[in-house]
Length: 335
Image (cartoon, rainbow, N blue to C red; front, side, top):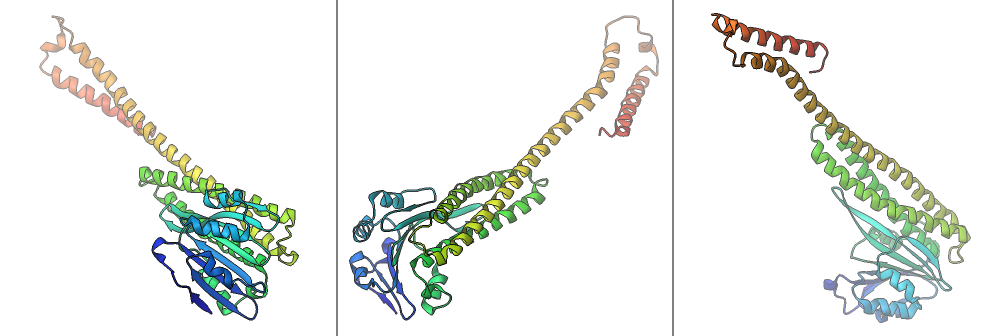
């Protein structure tokens, strides 16, 4: 069952959605105020309240008032925070980064926060659109286990979907690194700029994944009362995924550093080639300059000056000397 409540206006890009379900029924409604959704929240169902867009502070304040959210928790929701998990008396708070759009080397992301209570899950997102639409459809069609589970399983599935998309981001970065390995020699300057952009994204992923691992580890270690024992293995599986992602991230960081070293080596090799060429040219012209300098002295008695073949002989000597030196350099493979 799906209901669009009156007053809905998408022009502000703020969407307040409620999905209630259990084994027997499913109900979805979208409204513009918390007061419109509250009557649809039922004790015998799992209630997923999702807010897309945090610009409407009135909605956030109403959710804070109805669910008795701590002021510091709301502050974490509204401000950029590193991934973390905190348990309060009446709910569990988790925040992490959602990566969902890749444009070249730019990764689009947003912060998503979860508040898990006894029979509800609140999700706060910074902007419209997410990765959960296929999962919403699975809930509606009663596919999988979600309709048979409690709110903590819903939290697991949303975190798992978010974490799974990290693989797409890392795979994309891996493909770019493979391309750069082939194009580094043909176009080193452009490749180096792309390497620097990739390294920046890897730094961001590092800041997103390592705290997320710690947050999930804390949930497993503290054995939160809001997570049923039967669902602990699911959260442990997500933790394992994050650990695997971190391993892949470290590999790509090493590869990008290797590409940077390779670029530096290419530039050094080019510089060495230029210096070697200048040295060879200078070495060739040293004896030629000596010969020219000798015959450029202003002495009166120069026997060769009166010789008919003196000028061409000097040219033959200089060309022979230069050619011999070039031949020697080629023999030594210096050029």
